[in-house]
Amino acid sequence: MRMTPASPDPKLPPVRINLMSDTQTRPTLAMREAMARAEVGDEQIGDDPTTIALCERVADMLGKEAAVFLPSGTMCNVAATLVHCRPGDEILAHPSAHVLTREGGAHAALGGFQITPLPGENGVFTPETFRAAIQPVSRYSAPQRVVTVEQTANVGGGTIWKKSTLDEITAIARAHKLITHMDGARLMNACVATGVSARDMAEGWDSVWIDFSKGLGAPIGAVIAGTDTFIDEVWRWKQRLGGAMRQSGICAAACLYALDHHIDRLADDHANARTLARGLAQIPGITVNQPETNLIFFDPTATGITTQRMISELRKRGILTGALDHRIRACTHLDVTATMIEETVSAIRDIASKA
Image (tube, rainbow, N blue to C red):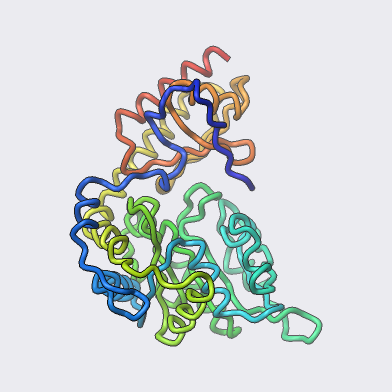
């Protein structure tokens, strides 16, 4: 499943409304000032106080023993599976999960692991599906080592894995001696939407990470947490994959600022997503999912206009969106206002009426 932006064209106007992804956020002035003031040292020798503070805080938030700062969420997923698995091992995940669809085959290329898809609606498989996929230990089968979930499920439409479902999955995994890994790319969106704390959401999961470069608005970074032993091994893979980031406190300061100022405001993104979905649902020919968080998927083809043409027409008006298969994905974030949502709905209505 590929996410394809509109092709760049120097003749097009500047992007005024960026609904492409929450990765498109820019650090706020206050976040930049926090970065400029950051106390730094050498992360490699454990001498960067700001990075240490970030990792300790995230480990406590998630109820884990330790944590490590990495450049990206993808690197968190890759490092985690390289620690948890051995060549030939099997990972169980939803077919649309990031580990399977958007990480360049890293898990196969670097670790020799196979990922077995567990189907389910809206990016979420059921505990029953997971249980049915577990095979008896046999020399004829790949060792089943890890089950992973993506919170929230991106391609599923920002779907939230319910706490009760997560608990059932971890219970099944423990009974069959499988390791549990949570891709927490939008974990804080799920927490804000449900009122469940990050610690409770991560309970029972052997490894879990938080991305700071999406809705939390930092320019770079993710933090993965787990046991002391697990994090020691993640550090080894961090070294193998490129090493420490030296004065990483400059980036860690942005993440600390996000924890202090950008979590509760995720509710604004969710409200804007619901407003966008309601507006689109009122346009004849537009089918749209009802968002649980900040992701909206809609299909304009029944209006007589293709997905790519709608994206192109919106881009001509300074509105940037993306395509996922036959659908358009719009993502709300801290750089998208309620007024921008109203303008986007109006533009789509106008484009559809002229189809």
